Image (cartoon, rainbow, N blue to C red):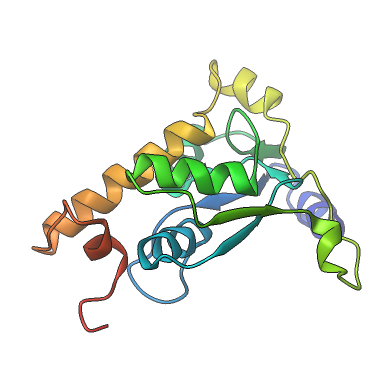
Length: 174
């Protein structure tokens, strides 16, 4: 909040975006959605919060919407039109890639006994964004489908088997 205020104080015409996103990466640290996919493909047990809500926007939609916000100023929430739990997100990812979600287990935030408090709802109110754009941003489910389509297209460009989810998430050398 102090950072937002400092930016707007120094540059009153700036646009400050509050956001949460997911997507795929060409290299480096894996995103949340990639971690879920890789775990599903490998049959790993995935524990995802059943009581923590968020509104992630797939990175490709994120970029497209930022372009449409040229000339805007102030603070704006940039997220999906709806919100889901982390567990529901994991199950959406499984369905979009035709994978079983049997290895996903919903857990509560409180069950971990974390020393510092964590918010259970980080969903973004995108009403102002929708008014600014003239329509609602994409939903979380639409973003997950866009993630799948983008990963398939990237695999094809790399000459990899786009019909194999394993080939979409595993490095060829691993």
